[in-house]
Image (cartoon, rainbow, N blue to C red; front, side):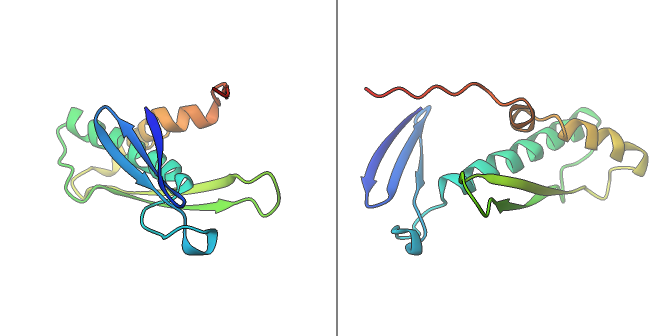
Length: 128
């Protein structure tokens, strides 16, 4: 992955040839032209949960119709700046029987992003 400055508070992330733009809201000096890095961070958790849910449904022969994830998050009110919590609600397809919900919950609770938050990786930052 590579990140490059575009203009103002906007940056472009290049991942395997895909481009993702990030920006800041106007009250933080940006143009609000794209999600913030923190929003993408939370979105990565929600989309990882959705992916795992979809794979579970496929493996067990259930359709993905109606599958979705809603996420709300809270920011720290005092330093350091960070996300302090996230609540995800998985919209389960109607076709999934009630006796399969616990298994689905167990699967989505262990998506890669959630596992990475539960056991944080080592982060090293160097200057070039």
